[in-house]
Length: 277
Image (cartoon, rainbow, N blue to C red; front, side, top):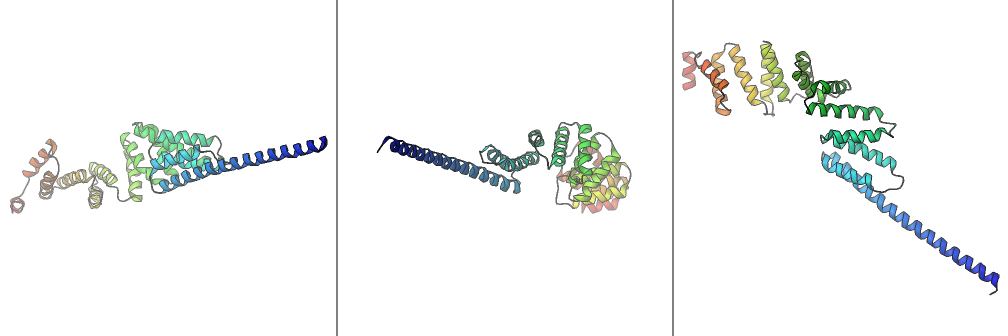
């Protein structure tokens, strides 16, 4: 082989080695990105499944891994996963962390600006609410109500109640109970308000509704209001019957004992005979 032939042979050989190396590098790269993308997709799906099941803490961990995993051209997918991550933080009650994620999204997002701002507002409202800063929290809940999110009416009612804005309190609790009629808490607060307002018919409506619910968390308070209601109606016999039942089920405080002593002095002979029997 002459010199020029050797050069051509060496050139082709080197070119072949280079091409094989390049193809090998591409193959390794494709495999790397495939595996990384596969991990990203798998953890994202785990996050979606956990989110749908209401397991928000589990969803948070899965979405975080998915976002941190390498992936080729994965920016759109990661933005969507981050939105789920932010909402998972929100639904888990981790509002400060939710705000951090909404802020990250706001730096690049162009399609969901109103939603992200809204979620930030409600998250901050919940932070203020939990800190007892009701004056700062109420506007956030009013914003949510204006957008049709009636589930926050209970928080708005509590804020208004703590701020002694009674007419607003009644309005918010009424809105909540209209949309979520199984709220014993809202029934109790409305019954108490109407009792003090001497609107006894409305008071009794909420007492009876609250006591009829499967939610028994406010039964003690509702039962007490029921006793006072009958006392105010001058139906001392019924009030006395009810307080005897109350004392067998709940703690007998000084207030309860005083009420019992008062009602026991207002009993008719027939009523006492019936109770003895």
